[in-house]
Length: 304
Length: 304
Image 1 (cartoon, each protein chain N blue to C red):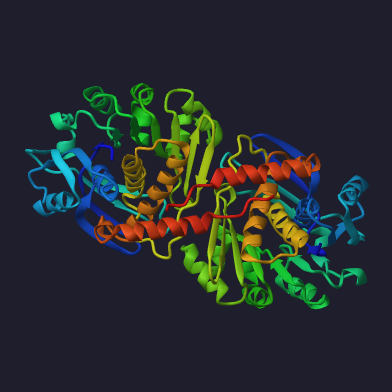
Image 2: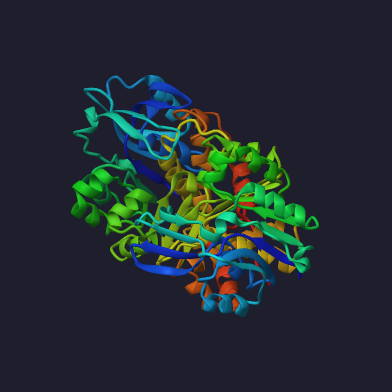
């Protein structure tokens, strides 16, 4: 089993959807990622929280076997995000962002984290992502996320980071913005020509596409009768994806495809409840069960 | 091989997309459907055109082996549709619709069409759809399409028609409008409880979902580097879907799934050029080739 390191945010989220609302609940990209990945492998986490971060959340993350040596606790308040979703659940409307302790976050890698086999650079400033990458021995696999804020505001720095990255995991709107083109196949060619060897495009309720220089893989999202809160779906996807790859140590095309399904499975659980509530109540049998349902969902016989 | 009958529109389309424009070219739901289906099976067509309908289009349809005994030619002008697409190619903006001879269209079924094995009721007034169904011996499979115009304007008549139909093939916006609910799984339950045994939801560039009482099947759309004109994609999908089922005579779940992939293959060709230009230049080897690419696109290994 490979060592998996994630750097990203730990947050307190306030979220409203047509199905309810929650206030100051556990959130953040590193939180969702690490919790999802923890079903497959051990995870080392690098993030920052404020003095106000509830101890129960620390306990929960520890209970998932997540190593919190890299969870810095600083003077000040924890990063807060406030958002809402309409019935069209695919996109959040941000109502308020308070970076707080995240503003001056400079990830420091604890000694025992310095040789990860896999590294996930969550959605933070691309210069910090590169800085993290420089602090560790080159992992077998580096994946990263980003967002429109960096695509628009730090494009050059982002491309420099992407040159060092194996897998870029972004949503379709971000892919189009980065590639400067509405056609995803052309976008993939452009992005793959400039660094990453694999591009994963998340399309929310429509599923996911994987592009590399040789092949394309596509999977629908798992059709759900109840979607309560899409927050964290993308990070949970990445966590399931990298957690599975870390657990097998196999980085073949076939393994990537299975990892994408495991990512989709984890995302499908996340959106069934607010915050990490569904992930808290999950066991590995359910994950395997939904993987098999995914197989049945997408299977068709080849022609002779 | 089963006999396949389609009733729908034959049109002259004027279309503008970011990649070009065409004026008064061959279009219409029955045209796209029958041309796609003709690669798999014989097709009988029922539609109406005006005196101005160019003979070259009749010749083309005949060259595809389509039986035109049911193509009525009437005094007046052929149905015309004018639309445009933005870079977001998923939805057309209708600029002008001239029903012309379609306005007073009352489909009459020629004697030799009266025992179809499969029947596709293209997007026309649901009362006319029901009228057609009453004129034939009950086929083994009846599928139909509709649109928001009928969902809003003739809801009761539409539900009466749907009670008699095996497969409803509509796009996701229409499904949500018909089911009165943003969640597609809930929409499918509602629709399936009121008649059709199968619901196929077309999601344009995002692929397709099949719901029945037992299972759900999902497939992504084929990722294309060039989409020139999405007009007719949905009807071509239906044509490939039903043409394949007619050719095998097998209406099992596995056969439906393959038929959906053949439908997706045909739609993927259609959008690569304006009007039916790509379908004109197609051979069956290319269709099989893309089916196999679809298999590779979506395949992943099950877990032990």
